[in-house]
Image (cartoon, rainbow, N blue to C red; front, side, top):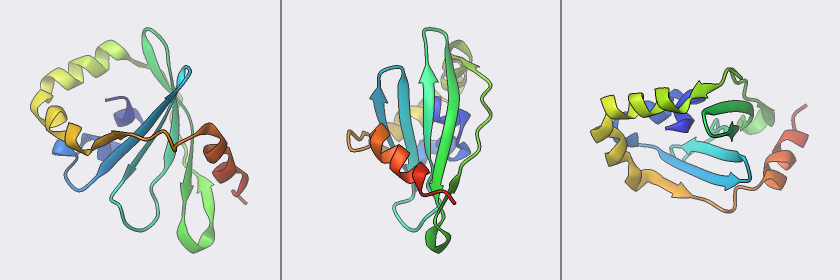
Length: 119
């Protein structure tokens, strides 16, 4: 659900055609949605607390042109709003779970390495 605040592909019914990878690191979560092919699959940092999810920053591999910033709207989103969104499309989100994987290889060090390549 949290990924929907930065990437509209996370709203795709059942994540059909996509994979969502995430890693929780302290108060942050790294998230990525990919089709498994090509480039243009951003990594985002989301910060969470007891009440909200807040996008922090994103980076995306653009292919031959290298890495770029993946802009985010840093407006916090209420977890209650996310829950209500889930409840209105529960079946779709539940069916997407088969395409959601915790991915410990997504680290802040790797994220910062990608950001360091932005020209």
